[in-house]
Image 1 (cartoon, rainbow, N blue to C red):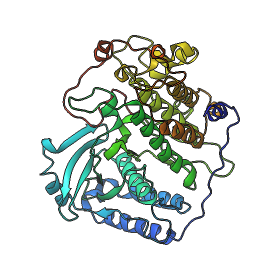
Image 2 (cartoon, helix red, strand yellow; image 1 turned 120 degrees about the vertical axis):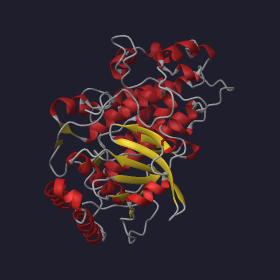
Image 3 (cartoon, rainbow, N blue to C red; image 1 turned 180 degrees about the horizontal axis):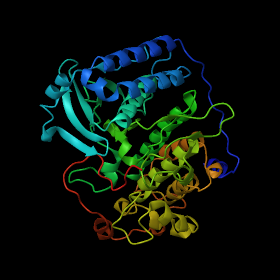
Image 4 (cartoon, rainbow, N blue to C red; image 1 turned 180 degrees about the vertical axis):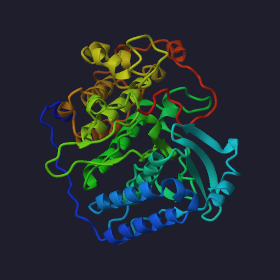
Length: 424
């Protein structure tokens, strides 16, 4: 493990990317794009407002997607139909959520609202995201998410079951994640929410990293997630993590290009500094965001917390001085852990996070190396009753529980994404 951590700190980290060739799904992909275009065009209210911009965007997107090949890790044959998302009517989804009743609401955010419902036609409990009707940008995000999740399949990416584009209504239907989001288990914890121990946290971190590795290394061209944050990491049974919300995803640079220039979007506190300042997006931008999430997992702090004192509101800014003094690492552990973690594992996890949030992109590791390091940490089972070498009882700093409780502002009730961090 030490050798892996040392290799991560190298300034010249490189990863052997898996280059895949466009598969036989190309014709089906383009055909489905045409179907989506016609489906949208048939909706007269939609034509009046968005017809021309959406047509242009679909044509532009379909041209880019011709080079994508998708390889599901659960289907090695490669001959199955790649786009499996079903089309649902608004009436079906209204019935599934009992007309979008408040008691079916899982949460809400800047994108819209998420409801729990049951689709009788497929006899499945689902999560239904009703997007805000906010014009062209909302439709761009809707189309990107439908296409990305139809083409990309991995155990650590959420499954898209279907979508609805009735009139100006835009809804996405996902598999239901019974444990909510990672954010739900780290911040403003609701009564009855189970505490996640150190072992579970490392498994979640490793799984989320694998999902990001799939986007970066298994898709060609690579996909830049662009909105990685704790509220976008959903938890299935057994705390199995899945990345969700791909509306801001972008195709990464190809050939000799080093970055993609784009409008700055994302969530404040998670955005890489070079992207926020210049709009130049790279795979390392996602690595920075992952480093912020890893810090949240370790510390229990929010990426941005206005309730903290000045100088401590930004998680990365608060952590950087502490990274320089190993003797202070224990002070960074989430007080909710109550000292129940391996000191050496804490040091190694913090070292990985520190490298991910380096200000200079070329100093950050590639995600494949992060996966290697975190997979090792996730495989090390920590038993509080066993004292390992370098894990003496006095090595873990345990602040009073009240300190953590006073840091929190309880919002009350369940919510999907009420983190004070906002999209840029």
